[in-house]
Image (cartoon, rainbow, N blue to C red):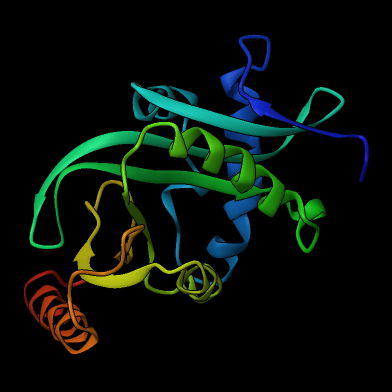
Length: 193
């Protein structure tokens, strides 16, 4: 795997190639019965998401085989107030899963995130994406909220995961309570097929 290059997306790498990688990476989710937005995202939607974001890619020759992005967002939620690093658009081409591509790409992104000085991280994924949830829990992320996605964008419920670099300010029982409460409220008022 020495022929893989890791870098912040340069201008010569097209957004179409980033979209193709994300589409390929998330097609297996569609086969599993839930459709994550990245499996069908258009280049126009991707460009809209990338405003004020930083995108990191793994390349084999000129082909994008891995993507991860972040942007700084201001939050006013019970679990975070102020600036938060929002991680999104993670995807590894199926041919490169099970390699260290994701970890090397994430390591590159982590160095850029550290330079921001922001200590709270947020990540969203489908409730069915158990592998990603468990992996993020290993990195210290905690489940904090359960919510619907806009119906025009996806047909699943999503979970919000947060990591506090300086330690979680809440006891585990409180996090579990708030997550379960949001799940009951969401499933009661926002039905999905």
